[in-house]
Amino acid sequence: MTGGNISVVSEDRENLSPEEDATLAPNEQDDDDEPNFPAKVNVMIEKMGKRILQIETTAQDDEIVIDEVYYFWMPSWRMRKSRI
Image (tube, rainbow, N blue to C red; front, side, top):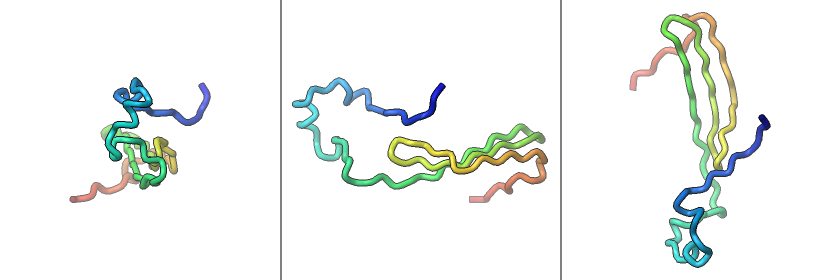
């Protein structure tokens, strides 16, 4: 298995002819001129009373980049739950 970028295409858009694609409203067309803002994604996998795996990622421009991976082998080291 090799790493790399994964191209994501909307199923609705992939079968359009160039003429149909040109008739879409401007907000429906791909807008490559404007950069997308990054979104932070934090994933925590915990087995009750056991070890914890935490993954911090950034999603931007059809890519998800893993920034940090943490492994907590003591449950007391876990992050406190926030009250929102």
